[in-house]
Image (cartoon, rainbow, N blue to C red):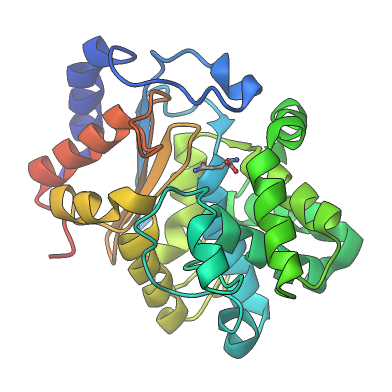
Length: 307
Ligand code: GLN
């Protein structure tokens, strides 16, 4: 299959629609300035073949896609029990920043891909690296992407000054004894992970272990996670990776996906390839409208699906 042609066709077909519908995330001021007409798409196969189209090489704010990588980092270094005693594995059926379930479920987030769950994962990462947590995460991302990856400091500052809900979620969990570390230190990591700046191609590369049974995307003779862990991360992406739209994603696209309010979505075709799309205009659930459409087109055109 000529993937470059497939991506070129998708980019060409969707270009006229870019920015027409949906809204860029306005609740984070630095994201509100992003041009809604950007559209990028890129993939990397298990064997290392790459293709990119549109703005596929332009960095953007990966936002909640980072939750995939912090979970991976935590799974890589922590015993399973230490992680899953604090975080569930069920779809929430609620918006990504919802507070409601946390109270009735005594501060234990439903899954690692909603904000509360990712904040709990960030707490675990602070346990692992202490004051060097941000640097360790940036190092891990660069190691996966095969080139330097850094935070957009302006986006991180913008999140920190407006992230009132995340502050509430973290304090709420802390009140239930579910965070070990200082709320400020945990949120500093969380706001920075959301502000990682990467292109679709870098994301497709970095997530490559998920289509290679956990093996590092660049054959550096290392497993990022075990085969079993890679399978489990894919399962969590399919059931929880796109918040309260996860059912619709599974129905329409049929691939494990993780989205972010920067307009990016990473998708995995297990044993075949990883794919990333970027279009900043979002639907009401905080998922990229055109990104979802692009993935739907890709699955239809290639016949690639987990089902
Ligand atoms: N930084 C965003 C937030 O915490 C991430 C949310 C997202 O991408 N869904 O609200």
